[in-house]
Image (tube, rainbow, N blue to C red; front, side, top):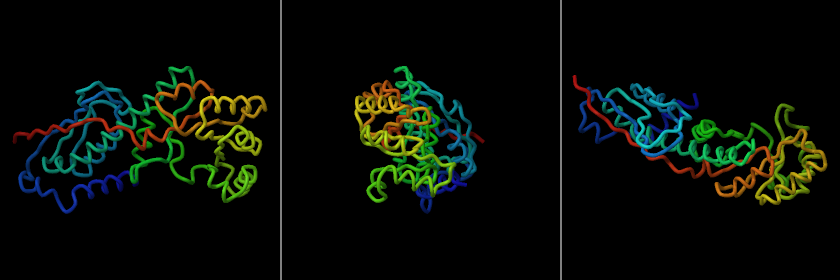
Length: 282
């Protein structure tokens, strides 16, 4: 199982050949209880994965809130029980996972709220700009935060970008090749850097046009041109590149269907959390 293998790897990387501090100081028979405290406002993500992580070490976890819930500072979000030494060994991996996933969910939720406030039904999506080994967890956190996961892997859909065009030919020819070789069940998306390329992609039969690194005014011009040519009926328009919290509203108002943002996975701020442990009396 992907999640189990990843979590075991995280534990192995952190524990190494053993927790020499805990092994030297803590009675392996001692039982303990612990509480994970979220110290700042956040949208929580990673609780189900954290409970799975604790189970791998023979401990039990109980969520005190739910994934996707926004909590205020100083909220107890998870209770953990089991061997004191096992809980100490799990501490850093547990906090890293919850802090990072909650950071991604929080960043996603903020952009989703901005999109709603600007009157649009535009979806906020992430990209494949994920940290090595963390794609499942980051994509899951985006989903918890109300965003769209976009492609998980290269085999999820066809996405024809500038480097593909440099090696494969024109947009029209590339779409033709993709339709001839790829299953009809896979959508075809084409990256466009100007309005004319967007129209060419739509005329070639693309399912999605990705307007890349355009200003809001350039995006609006592209959307208007597609509308004028009556090409929007069966076409999704996505925007990506240079999207920030400050300029997101301007892109939403252009009427595009999807806005993808790499920063919500690649550089989301970790949420401050701590694990407070107490030894249980016999």
